[in-house]
Amino acid sequence: MKNRTLVVEFLLLRLAEGWVLWLQAVLFLMIYLMAALENVVILLLTLVDRRLHTPMYFFLRHLSFLDLCLISATMPKSILNSFTLSDSISFLGCVLQLFLVVLLAGSEIGILTAMSYDRYVAICHPLHYEAVMSSAFCVQLMALSWINGGAFGVLYSAGTFSLEFCGSNRVHQFFCDVPALLKLTCSAEHTTIEASVAVGVCYAFLCLVCIVVSYVHILSTVLKIPSKQSQSKAFYTCMPHLIVVSTFLGTGAIAYLKPAADGPPVVDLLVSVFYSTVPPALNPLIYCLRNKDIRSALGKVLRRVRSSWQGNGKRTKSKLAPRVSGFCCCSASTEVFKFLLRD
Image (cartoon, rainbow, N blue to C red; front, side, top):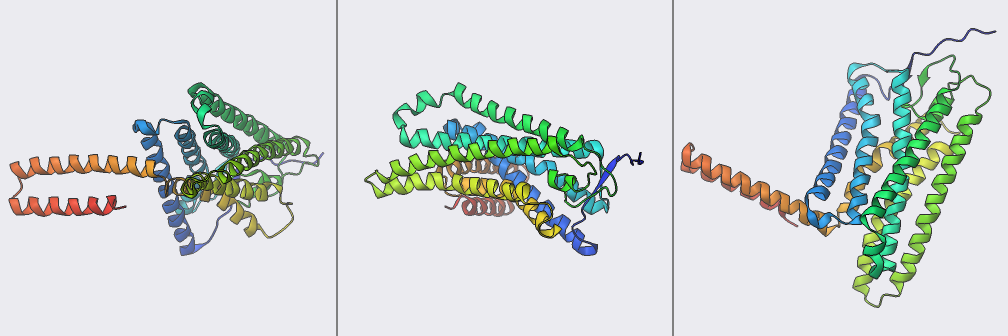
């Protein structure tokens, strides 16, 4: 019997060396902070503003939460390793990271499918919208998405780490991902993980079919609307969702279905960076750039902050600050908020 070396840690891929490594770490940090800020803003706005307490924004809020968790499961460890010049991640840390990535990605597919159904009911059956998309039904769809994601997280992590790892423990990826870990195993049979991936592919394909069917009905309904303005409004409502779905499922399919031996490692790395980093950073912008409700809610919050700031400035000015200084401060703050609120 051959001796097997017990793997207690893995070494994640270092994306660069020297000053380029620091530059990459700073870039990742900026992307992470931007994505976190965007998703937190959407979370808070959809919670605070009563006008956004609708099924559409209920699912958008949970999508933002999933995106925030997904990017937080991968990027902070890579950023920390880059700054500390360390590549290691513990065995349990790798298990947890893989579980979270699969759980969150699987849940996000479910939420995206629920959002497409919400748009289908809103456009094709507007008179029954409130009855169909009730609060209880929305919670059930959300819970089902999380349950499915959790089941896939358990299947993928259990199937991957039930295999034997021998030889190199260097993962050619910036986080623990199934395709990269399978290259390190010395087990001849991958039946469990292959079955798990097959089930995951079927689930993703079923969700994709539901999304496509929903949008076929939406398109046929929109084309029957006589008003061009109403048609444009309906298209603009649905287009961001289609872009997000295409990006997320497309990059995920390439990452998990591409044969392991095809292409250099840099291709796998770029694909993984794209599907785990870009969607969480761009989804808030894609959904909210043309969304008047979100912009209105954000403007309302900024106006409250401005009023509070100006009120505090006036009280401080009357007690402590000279008139000229107070006038300059208030004028500057007013101009800043005018610029921020400009549409």
